Every structure is written in structure tokens, then in C-alpha cells.
Length: 88
Image (cartoon, rainbow, N blue to C red; front, side, top):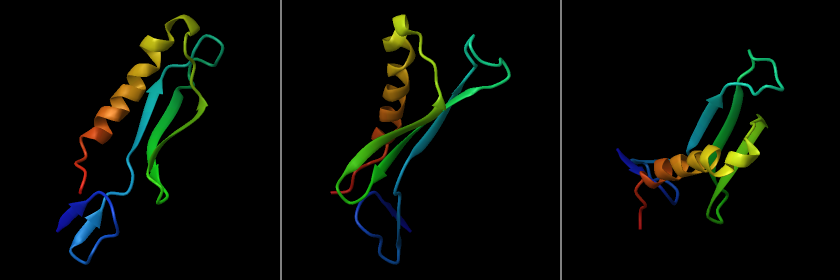
């Protein structure tokens, strides 16, 4: 069985269609300390190419530390999807 990363699979192939990562952090000082914050970053492809989708109900970022608190999530996700080989 061959795993492919684009196009529609033949009988002896499996298509990896999307990648999803869920990140979790502790609540901030404005919330109940028992409620964790979650953010889900996923890949999407509706036929027009790959997109990155971000979903969250609540994810707090210290405004003074945006680059050190949020960009590492995006870089981590990018590294994970870059591990997937592309079929030409």
C-alpha cells in the first residue's frame, strides 16, 4: 500500500488528506484556572491548494510577547506538515 499526498488514490494507494494539531495551554488570569485553552491548526485542500486553518474558542497571547508565544505554534505546525513528502 502506497501513501500519497495529492490527487485521488488508486486501489493500492491511501491519500493523506489533511493534518491537524491541537495545542493546549493553561487558562490566563481572566478565566477559571481549571479551564484549559485550546487552539487547533489544520491543513485544508478543497482542490485549489493547501490552506492553513486556525480554530479556537479561547487562546490568550501576551500582547508584549506575541512573537515568542504565537509564532512558535505556527512554526511547529509548518515543520510537521513539511515532514510530509510531496508527490510530483
